[in-house]
Image (tube, rainbow, N blue to C red; front, side, top):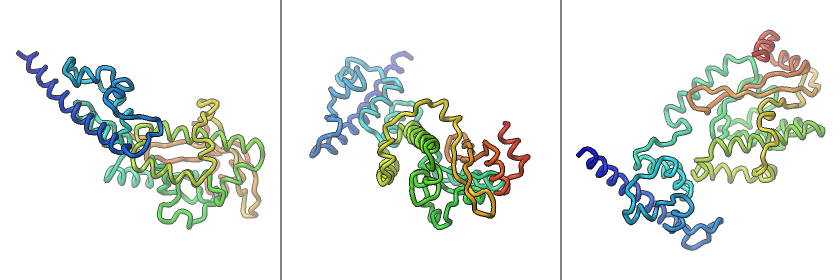
Amino acid sequence: MTVHKDENFQYKTLKIVLGEIEAVRMKRQREYADQSHPLLKRFTQQELNDEACPTYKNLLVGRSRRVPDRQTIIQIAEYLECNSDERNDLLLAAEYLPIHHELEGRSLELALEHAQQIMSNLPFPAMIVTHTLDIKGLNEPFRHLFDIPFDSFMNDKLNMADFHFNRDLPIRPRSTFDTASLEQWESHAIYGIQAFKRNNMYSRYDHWYKKLFNRFQKYDDINKYWNKQPKDLADEVEQSKTILARRDTSGELVPIRYKQIHLSVSSRMYPGIEVYLPVDDPAHRVFEYLGCPAECQNYAVNQ
């Protein structure tokens, strides 16, 4: 009798799941009723069966009553180009845990406050970044190291893409002053773009992702590197960067090498703090000029 009840419950769950899937599938068909899909998708039941769930037609006609496993539901959501809310509705309908990658609302506010408190105690150049690559805070050592104009940070309008690709900000020309530094800059750009895509692979149909992608389009280099892969992912993580920085009050620019580390402030990767550490002797001297004591530098670099 228990088995019978379990089968009935599973069948009711399956009917709910199929209803949710069909609602999204037909919604996609309507969206492309007057235009061709870039990948020529037709969003038919047969195509969904062929591309995402080999048992879908059997489920529809009742030959199978088994709710697809969680990974198959995710594959169906990917095929249907679901945004995060639509995908999680499918997972919840199938009695599976939803996917929540990033903090929202009050949880995000508290995490940002915590990040600000941590950053305020760091002697190193640092900035607070969200999963959308928006810069939500930066300290004075960071501002002075990269010569970030104060007005560029007004109204939260500075983004990591702007920081890296905007030719009007100092970091771009100061990071590409010779052949070796240009190669490092390009490698870092490609790694950063692919890391962003990888971290947000389940969000690429969300409104915020599409809006951010459209914002990126103003930078030709992002389009140039968007589909390029890093040559060596492990090496890129450890690779130092080079930039021209002011050594002292004379304003003289000297090449220094630094490395960037990411500090998470919660159970999620973002929001997080990007911290910059010196690598060579010129960098140590510049960081000391920025207010970072030599003993702090030595301790951090040796960890």
